[in-house]
Length: 277
Image (spheres, rainbow, N blue to C red):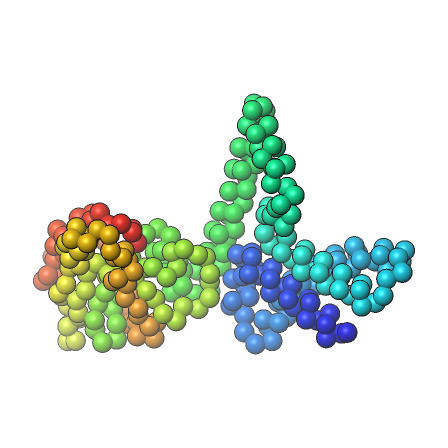
């Protein structure tokens, strides 16, 4: 029975950490026994709360220990999920509450004060979620500058220049972190390339050899019903092969007089793609 209790506490902790951004960051950055310690710490709170709810049942109802354990375990996991999702708890009872929520929404939209209160509540929720992401980004910056640059480049849709250990250079938009906020260690990076080239081994002079924008435009015009360009041309780069990484601005790069091969106008033009990176 002790093993079951420990397993439920850890499960609740892991579930909560997957649903809450800042907690997820802490868990992903932990290793070894520290991971189990954090999961246990998060899960213990939900286990105690479920115990308080289950205690009256044990006192006033003739329920077996096994049934109480099952109820307690279910409540522990449920509380972890509800707290992790915060405002999405009603979705657990969606069939019974869909109509009620629709009626309530219609009433709030019809009544002026209620409508304004709804807007304020939505703004407060958005501000809280935005603040949570910003705090997680700050934690990320303190722990790992590389991960923070990836996060910022993906969120701000900033072009990034990667120089590989082979002196190959890719410039483009990061793809693999643009749709989620996971903060685990990045082993591979996928980018949508716009320019590629190489660095001279002696003086590290950067030379561009391929501009992808014209090719993207021709392909998009000739085959408008085909697969998206982002799916066809993404490039996978192992992190272990990256020598340097930097933000890249074509406008600023063209102002350096020491560069032998300036960025062409094609690289700075905006291309109308079906899928923006």
